[in-house]
Amino acid sequence: MTDHQALAIGSVTLDGRAVLAPMSGVTDVGMRRIARRFGASMVVSEMVASDELVKGSAEAALRAEGDGVDPHVVQLAGCDPRWMGEAAKLAEAAGAAIIDINMGCPAKRVTGGYAGSALMRDLDHALTLIEATVGAVSIPVTVKMRLGWDHDSLNAPELARRAEAAGVQLVTVHGRTRQQFYKGTADWSAIAAVKRAVSIPVVANGDCATADQAREMLAQSGADAVMIGRAALGRPWLIGGIARALENGGHVVLPSPAACRDAAIEHYETLLSIYGRASGLRHARKHLAAYAEEHAAAGYAVPAALRARIVVSEDPEEVVGLLAAAFETAHVEEAA
Ligand SMILES: Cc1cc2nc3c(=O)[nH]c(=O)nc-3n(C[C@H](O)[C@H](O)[C@H](O)COP(=O)(O)O)c2cc1C
Image (tube, rainbow, N blue to C red; front, side):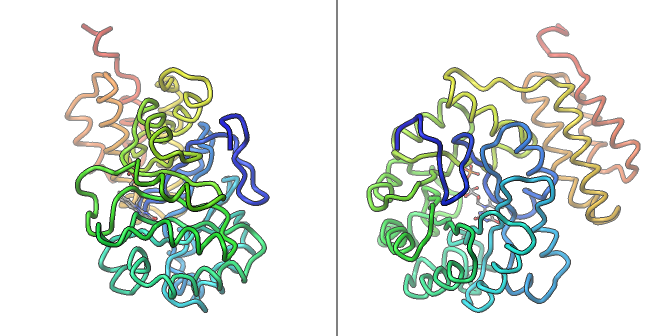
C-alpha cells in the first residue's frame, strides 16, 4: 500500500491514517464523536464484554453506543465463541460498521477469564472466537493484539496470519507483550514482522503522541496507520491533528481554544445525558481533569484552584462555567 492509497477495511474506507484507540472508561461515545469530528480517521469503542451485551446489560449497551459516530467500530471481548457471534450480530444490527476483537488487554480480570491477551497463549482457541465472529456478521472484523504473551512467545505474526486466513480485514498491534503491561517502551520495529506476515492493513500502536512519533512509528513498523490512546485523553482533537500532519507534513495544528472549549462542554453534557447525572459525573471526572491539565500543558495559565475544583464539583452549571473559564485563560507567553 502506498502513502496515497486510501486505507480500506473491507467495504469501509478511511479518510486518513490516525485512529483513536479503544480505552475502557475513556472512549465513551461523547469522546468518540468529538475525536471523529476533529478528524480522527476512525474511533473504536470501549471494550464490550460479549456475554454482557447478549444478556442485555445496560452498561454494555452504553459502551457499544455509536450514535453520531461513522464508521462505528465496536470492540468485543470474550472467551466463548457463542457469545462472540451473538454479540457481533447484535452490534451489527444496532449499526456497527466494523467489529474489533480484543486480544490485547492485559488486565487480570480479562485474562483471568481467558479473554484479552490471554488468547495469545492459545491461538487455536483465539481462532474459534475469530471464526465465530466473522461467520456471524457481514461487516468487516478486525483484531487488536499485543506482540505476544512474553518475549519468548512473540506470536503476533502467526496470530495475524491465521486471523487473515479466517477472514479478518485489519489487525492492530500494540508493540508490547502482555507481561510488559504498560512498562518500558513500545517496540515499533517489532510490528514490522506482523506487517510482513499479512497482506491486510496493519495499524501500529503504543506510545505515540506527536506527528513526528507517528511518522517514525510508520517508518519503523511499515504499518498503514497509527493508533493513539493515552495521549488523546483531554485532547480528543489530537488524533485528527496527527492525521492531517501525516497527510500534509509538518506538526499538529490544534483547534482554537474556543473550539476546544465547546467540544469539552459538549462531551461533559453528553456524559450527563447518557449516563444520568450521578453516574455521568463519575464518568466525567477523568475527562474534566484531563481537559484542564492538557490545556495547561499546552501553555495556558489554567489556575490550580480551577483544576482542583472542576473534578469535585457536582453542580453541572458550575462545571460548565469552570470549563469555559479554563479554555478562556491566556497563553502564558502572551500573559507574561
Ligand atoms: C485506561 C485504558 C483503557 C484501555 N482499554 C482498552 C480496551 O478496552 N480495549 C483495548 O483493546 N485496549 C485498551 N487499552 C489499550 C489501548 O488501546 C492501547 O493499546 C494502549 O494504551 C497503548 O497505546 P497508547 O500508548 O497510545 O496509549 C486501554 C488503555 C488504557 C490506558
